[in-house]
Image 1 (cartoon, rainbow, N blue to C red):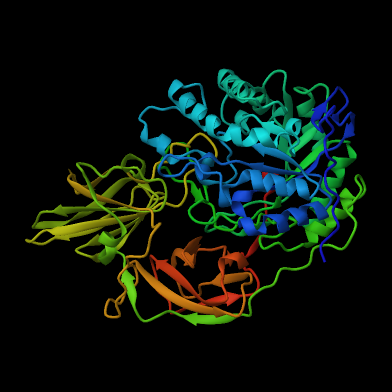
Image 2 (image 1 turned 180 degrees about the vertical axis):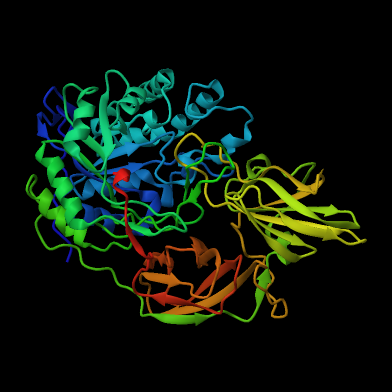
Length: 613
């Protein structure tokens, strides 16, 4: 049974329920107020589940929900902006209001969030010389176009107009990136001039340089951290001498990269840290209250190197569970109950029973159908080619997400010489006359593959898998595909056929039983799973290598035997009663069956390093 949750009071004509602050703290409706918020991203949750997840957030005791608005999620490949369906941030906000929650919006233009390119549209990387996240006129023109699209969606939701939105953020943790005050003022003025009249604030790390670089004079400064609140607030007080202290991101878990352990943070320790924070009288936004999922190609990446295409690339996994109090599939975890107990010491909790568990599938194994569709044999069904003298990156041929294929011909005969690809973004599968030669990866830029060419010459195919653009730090100019060139021996190779492979339409694939795929030969496989009724499932892929998985035409995301994530979350609204089709693109090692499980497996556990808090 769901909790009985009080709705927000309706604003009066004389005094709308706007959030403000004085020298002592937040003020709402003329009375002192404390913000206890939880981050919950609508773009990481199926829209049919928004209400359920918001109800769970309110049941934990939060009075506010926080979400980013990713520019690249709303700008379609056509250039049009979409705020409907899964992208209906207004509906999400109204549902939050119905659950008794205020709303904080963070429209960027940059959001980080472990999201593809930090929310920026990939097409910005096609413009030579454009400087991101600064007052470069070309970049500001693009940002103005985004604000022209998104602010009209925000205005009817503002508290001054009877809506739930009480605060809007200026940029996002800008002090971790730069110090261009003119850029921040342009963003501030852009929001104000378009009619945003609610509380504006900045959020930056609790370090002097970060607060100096990211603050905007005259506007509330907040901090992002995950522990030692007294120490962090001491730093914030140097830049926010009066008014409320706020942890705008209080990190209560962490995210995962492929090839690393699944990060967790002890529930009792996290609750003690939250209690310590709230005991100071400060306000908080739990990051994340509910993490959700990086469906499709939307997972971002980190980079610990010092230059593009250097070692240190860390792609983020499909799950964004974040070890949050509300699990990826809506579970009320041990951390949920611990946090609820702490919040109840400072705010009244909603009455009634807590939301119950969500139905899950009965476990089953599903064998693949006999016929498969080899990717190299289906290029014409997937894409129209373009010709270029050099192998240009995705962005230069108008592509944002997916894979990209390059083909050229090398004359022969030639002795065995090293084949080198410069500027791989991110994983290149190489073929000679359709025969797999091997895989090259951006984290090993010096690696080559030996290639001997016979008298008839050879057709060289390179399929590049993009694993997510960098979303944090100075190396945001993370172009995908091939960024510099391909050489055989000392000779640069020219005259390329390029096929963008966004994989948005698989309807023309030709499946053939005789076209059996071998390992390292990418191929699509089909499965049919029958359910009596839709329910949550977790798809495991034992015996498979790495690739992509679709359910009834929807791309659940990436999988990899590299781990840590071993199951992909498939929420109930994506299933239907009766037969369901799953399509799998395997890039490395082909298996025979998949499993539908009733519980997730996010991999071997490791505590997040204390430095991340």
